[in-house]
Length: 572
Ligand code: FAD
Image 1 (cartoon, rainbow, N blue to C red):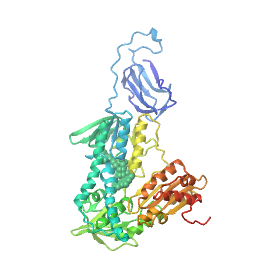
Image 2 (cartoon, protein in one colour):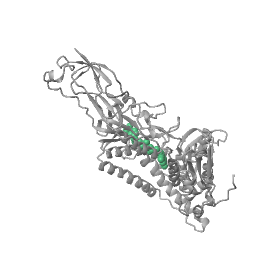
Image 3 (cartoon, rainbow, N blue to C red):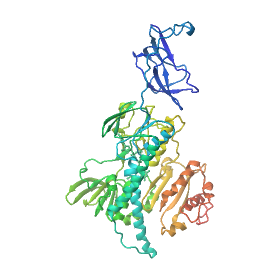
Image 4 (cartoon, rainbow, N blue to C red):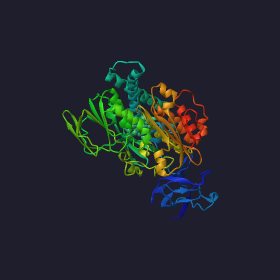
């Protein structure tokens, strides 16, 4: 038997491409033209066919290797029945009919696991780029946490809370509304209608793009197969590429009585089954404070307990202050540096025990909301069956193209790392879809905005002052108080400010933040300034409409540029 080495054939204009799958094993008999390995370039996926029938003697490449034209990929022992390839073609006998080639029997180009903002965006973008897409979702409706039990329903309720709050505040302006009558069923219906409208819209968008949607829980069976438990039994999807967008879920603290429905996570709180007389929110982060805001305005006496010394861990303390002042009036108690040590389910309520220097005596609540963070679902999808690495916290490490350690499998959104935000997930979804379609995309955002939709709102984007100090980054700061902003005063608001950080050396905008009514909207301009590397003059010389809250961005920049006239700032 003669042995030949099979080289990578002419693969076009590529210096190096990656082996994403080895399709044969040592000892396997292969037919002429049978696919041996699968290569993936930035533009396409290619099979390397076997030039002759034979038996695989040795594999010379493995998954993940980078190869170029001419590189040997395996040693093949030629069948004695096939001609010696060293003999010129003209001198060879006529070839025997080729054996049927092993088809790569994929059901779809891309299987997307999870239909949250990351998953549905990836699925739709991939379909728009001409790929055949299957979207797998365990819940009956599309849209994931964000649309069903996260961003959207919480903001619908927060809007209601803001209106009630602002109507009450009008008393100081001489307009007195009566005490609001809250029809909880109707409010719940409104919130659900907003959710239904958006999730129903996704069904239409999937149909229009011919994305196949499978309802059921998916798990990897091997690097190219997902098995899905559907209502009609198990279904298998063989995919060429997969995008894992399985998101996250609420963190559970050990030892709490989860069987008692009065202990809620954010999903339970958003169901709005009742407005309890007394409610405890465990966790002073974004979700905890937003829900505390809603329930307090709807009539509950709300306490917030937070383990760390401050609210909104990670946010600059100066931004938290105006919110905390407002919350101190709206909420019954805010306990910082205090831990919940136990929750006893009793007939009259949930009795909560606290620990810490400022810990109160045990108290009984009608409802307790546990909002201490979210944990990624990496450990729940049998990722190991596909060879996909998952870290100890359940995150799936990815590169800038959202590729996992298995080159044809991608991960996006909450499961791919912090920050766990919907707008990060959607951008990552687009990158993954575009890379699979052969585009040269990568996730290269300089900043991802964060917004807390309380009243007042808090927003920050890019570098924070806390981070700048921790990293020793030299910066100049421009700040403008909303007490000097006409629009803010007209809204009855004297609290809050906008600040912008500029690189001390280059003058470029590194980050910005604001606290006040609708402060979140200002993150758009500040984010753009960071992305474009604007300096204080670029922002200050951009004419902002008057009177708007966005003028505070222009004026914060003018404060940094030394051109501000709306305040007197002594020369430094
Ligand atoms: P998810 O939205 O978590 O979606 C994952 C989907 O995968 C789910 O539908 C799940 O059912 C499905 N899935 C999981 N495992 C499987 C499986 N094995 N088989 C099939 N399907 C599976 N972010 C913001 O940016 N702004 C906000 O205002 C905001 N507010 C929030 C408020 C609340 C109360 C909560 C809880 C979250 C909020 N978030 C907000 C966070 C935001 O919802 C998430 O960052 C975002 O939804 C993450 O998107 P994703 O696509 O990664 O995953």
